[in-house]
Image 1 (cartoon, rainbow, N blue to C red):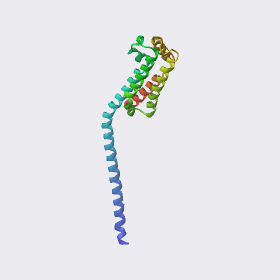
Image 2: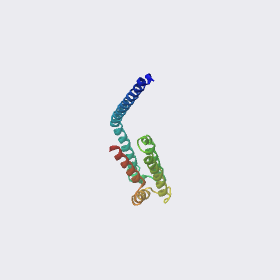
Image 3: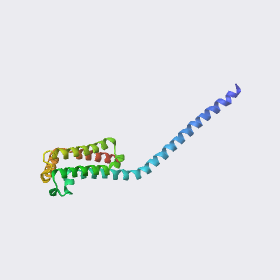
Image 4: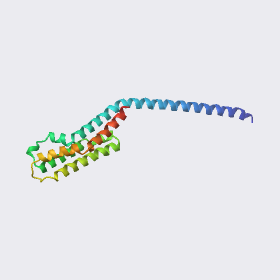
Length: 170
């Protein structure tokens, strides 16, 4: 019984000391993690923003107006232009596949949807012409229809991309 008078208070002191030290060490660990996250954020944010910039450029470069501007449309047939547009779209997306690591899954899916819809749009437009016809009317139709179809897949993806980039900058 006499020993309990000494052991019980010693255990209480030991337990209290352990609790205080545990909380202190946990707090110090959390503080170190916060500092590391803050430091890494300084390095990661510019890299992620460059990824967003590249994806924004990808989306802009896959609009009919932009793609057609770089092509010698009068020298092509409808079929040649269709194949060239499809190849350009695929190349642009293939070149930027690695950018998916910088955006959310939802935004990346919207960007992939742009590729599918732009290829479908190019093919649907070509269906209104004979393959060996001159490509100029086809090109004009692509630009006109694209601009008058309401909000385009590119614009939807651009909105998502901008919103996500703004979240990073907060």
